[in-house]
Image 1 (cartoon, one colour):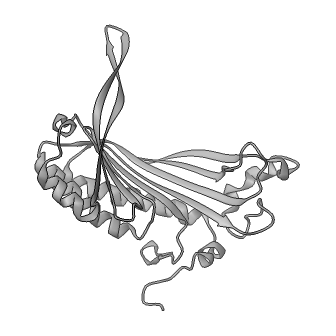
Image 2: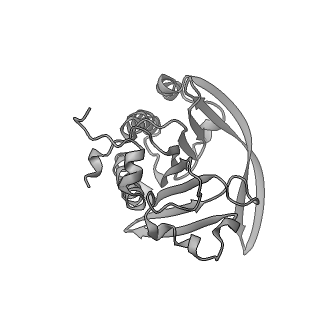
Image 3: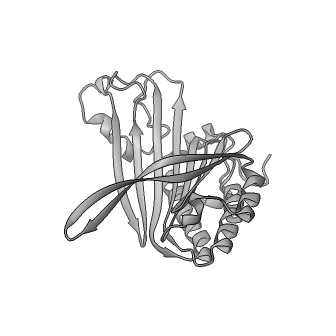
Length: 256
């Protein structure tokens, strides 16, 4: 399967989060956001809010651990529909998307913001890069535990671990896989929003979080984001069947 040709008409993606953690802090951001950065951000995120939050900081010295609280400024920028938010603090910025269109669109917006940010602070480096896709598959079917037509059966064997699946109130797995220098945290199963009641709704979660911890320069961030996205996409496609792809309205390029 060519992953570049996959385009779902109805995506199960409920949320996408991309976060860039800085090596060191940009103290200036606690007072103001430089105008060149604000101008670029407001092209995609025109609604601005500033919040003061309390950050906890651990300090280790002479085998003694102390915890300090300090106030930091948190900048929030929203799209007009408020379906995506950019968050900036002195040591990171993150984008949260609640209405997914395409990864290409996300990358274009992110690149504009990232480039102006690193231009304003040319010595800035990234110490950690994370990208997370939360997929929620909801089906209106009677048996909430029958996923054999939709989910790779290797992911659903947990339902056979009890004599009576109808008594299950939560069935959730945590899997961590290392791909060279990228870590994939994969959480999947039926989380059950009605917990601790038994599971009634047919909802399956595929939560994929890929991260890289290490020093990255500005131009390296895009390269690693593409690598992380590819790992997430491969794991997602491995986890579902053609029946579910059809349900999502898989549409290949150049097809009507």
